[in-house]
Image 1 (cartoon, rainbow, N blue to C red):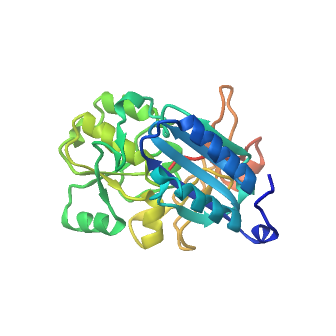
Image 2: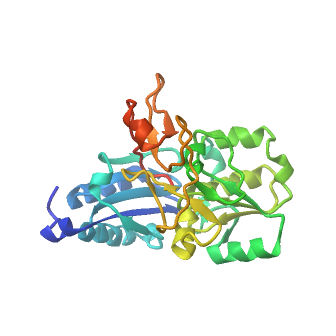
Length: 302
């Protein structure tokens, strides 16, 4: 496990997040390779593979993470991976998980998702952060549509965005099929999520259901934050799927979350166990200290 690590790796750490939609003929073989590579470099995190591609968030020493990215990109289908870097390390994840699933993001409709070497087939047009601002400046009918889970949006979101009442990504399909957003089918709808992977699939699912003018924020909130920080239309904290739980782009970030226990302003998210599993809630530090809760931890999403 320590074969390629060295003392320099302990001086600083990084977390990287990326995804690639591309046809994979043998996801299991790639799973074995990715697990062996991460173990050898001492990385932790979560990697999901499917016939549609890869979705990964891993952390470790800076040198080890650089080697991981370089070697992953040496595999032809992953050569163009757009990698987001942030502060952190292996300690921000409870373990290493590398799995093969039907989808790299679980919307529950793998049969609807088609990919080629260019990514999702039939998805919405990509907008850079600057292109999004240009569209919002010249049109007053643009709809910003949050492609994340409701708990993520509770601590940070785009101004004026629609936040669907979903607890899990798989809830989106039923909500769209219910007709709840049919009134938006002829309006320009821009979806967004953490790093882009969820909204890339979501645009395709929306177009399959008759939405005619659908876009996605290229690179997601993470790319937007790198470009505009807290000086644009984003407000609040960004929920992330590792031990940090949430992060902000600048010290000027607004606090938009509200403690479910006392009503105080907070960006903290905790895991308040429920009988049927996890119960993530927005809760301030003082209230959490008086209850049996733990800081929320997760894995790859985007």
